[in-house]
Image 1: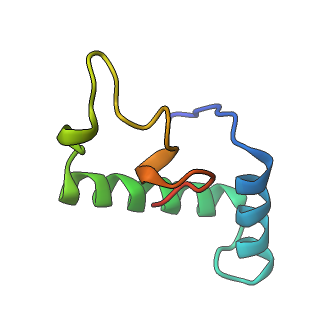
Image 2: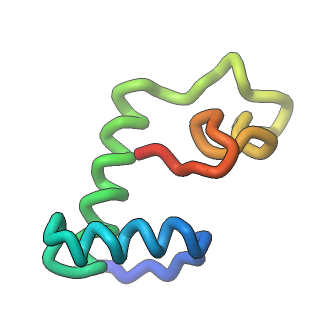
Length: 74
């Protein structure tokens, strides 16, 4: 399986750690793999928010992911 290195905000890392500690996932690797996979499935189901896209942009730069200021939604 390919390895990917990412940098995430501290609050997201803390949420992942909390999910692992609560027993939702066996470890961080499993948590991140499942959360990314779930996020990709949700993205494919809803598609990109075309109406929010500007020229050359995704529409996420100003409002955070999925329109939430400080939250990543999967």
